Structure formats: structure tokens, C-alpha cells
Image 1 (cartoon, rainbow, N blue to C red):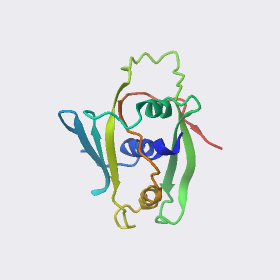
Image 2: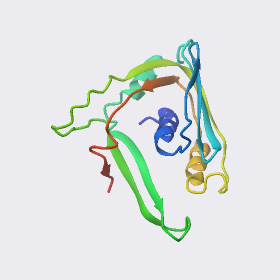
Image 3: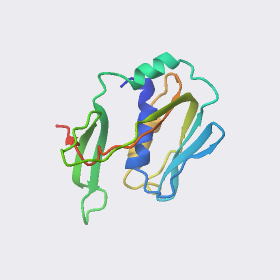
Image 4: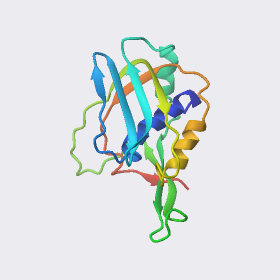
Length: 172
């Protein structure tokens, strides 16, 4: 994945993987949407999408999002060791949710096609301390440390899939 798309793509994965705030929602007024992700009440990232303004470079943004070399979404599974705080882990490895999913024959779920809207946007990280996000502060700090070299636009993608149930594999 191109570095310019990396931060926003990783941010999107936070909503399903890191946030434990079940009140998560996207607030939209007209064509402008705002949202945030939080963990244990700490708001660690805010996002804004404005679909009334075209992206700086729509062709490049579409190219990034449809990269044929993209094999899927990479995740990091980490479960702290029982009785040992956050010093050691019981489980710790990378996984891949592949972009192409093979469903078993008995799965008959009909999922809607993804919808994509392009525009402009921004994201703002709130740098956490250990006390704010004990199990994930280092991840958010690492993302906050990444330099955004340029911004080509924003895409709002609404999708549903069963990737977390099927075809997820450990990256060796």
C-alpha cells in the first residue's frame, strides 16, 4: 500500500479492531461527516470527510485504493498474559484479512456491494499516555509519529464482509 494511503487506511481499521467504545458513530450533516475512535473513554483519533470538495488528486487516490498488489488488511493480534499485566503476552502475531475471501459452500449470506465516495478530509491524532490506553498506547503513538508527506484526498467506503470469520491467516 502506498505510504500516502497508509495512515488513513490504518485509521479505518482502528474502528473495528482497537476501539472498544460501542457508542461509535459517524455524524453527517449534508455531505460532511465527522467521527472519532476512542478506547476506554480516551479519544485517540478524529476524522473529517468532506464530500462536497473534490480530492486533490482523484486519479492517484483511486489508484492507491485499487492497488492490485494489495493482498488485504494486516492486523496485529495481542492479548496480554494473564496475571502478568502488560509485560508479556499470551498471544502476539500479525494476521492478514485477505482482500479476496473464499466462503464455504454453506455460507449463503448476501452482502451489499461497497459504496465509495471521494472528497477531502483530515485526521488528528491525540497522543496517549500509558494510563490512557494501557494495551494500545504504543500503537497510536507509533502512528502519530509517522510523517504524512502529502495528502491526495479522502475516501469514505461503506462495506460489510465476513473476512474476520473466514480466510484470516497468521503471517509467518
